[in-house]
Length: 352
Image (cartoon, rainbow, N blue to C red; front, side):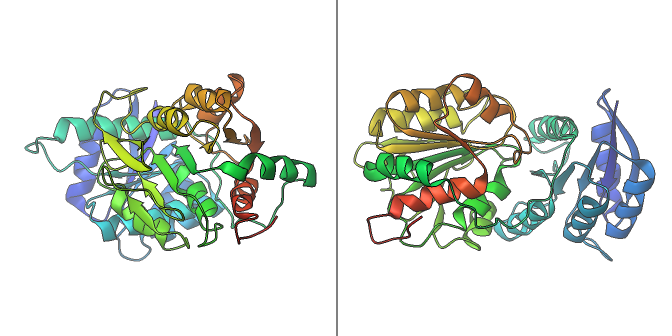
């Protein structure tokens, strides 16, 4: 049994979540809390396997409660939001900075046409996050450098790079923020990103990322040109890929690895269009999405990078890529940022 603590200031919402999560035979709701203060105390006393956390609450809000729990008694936390507006979603991702693993919408009610899907998604997310036994707060990246020898190899390989493609899942938002925040505004190539997340939050995620990045961060639009020094996120329910003429191609073709957007779709399209003139990066996450296609990118001559185990919340996707021989380099997020910064070497930008 997976023990769940539910935190929400609304009695109706708490009862609703107790009903939903308690309906699954693998989940046991061991307690509820009305605000952040109660959440901190209940987390210590009840020792749940996972916590669902609201954001806007009296006394301590969800951000402060998450921060305190992750500092004193680390437990997997899922932010369950009653709203997916851009402002609310951006606020929810502040809790990711504090250590929360995922952000998801609370189901709206039995009469909602999306009720069954959102209930399944909530239950599945709670179960998956409960499996993450080691939860770390991500510190601000230190200025760390790749070795001189590796830097020279990378600079030579990056001379003709035209695009960077990044895929991430569980634990990815904070790593993406850390990497993008290090890139200079004159970064000379576009960055295409797939981050697995619940529907309704991508615009808020883009706003949150943009708040710490010198690069403009967009939710991609079909057939728009992707521009140097801009980052593009796949929208809800669409694969994102690279098309001819440096244009974004969105697709609602079948999910891959059970996912849409899929990292596999992105990497495969980049391999087909750009071949060796690309960088592929696979970050923390469960499963194997993108691993085989990262190998395809490598086989076509692209630079391929995976996040190291030590810094990953979950090393499923990167680990699968390593096992397939898909990684040119295995690096920490700080060193990944240094590699990308080296793209600007010789083009008026930052030097390693």
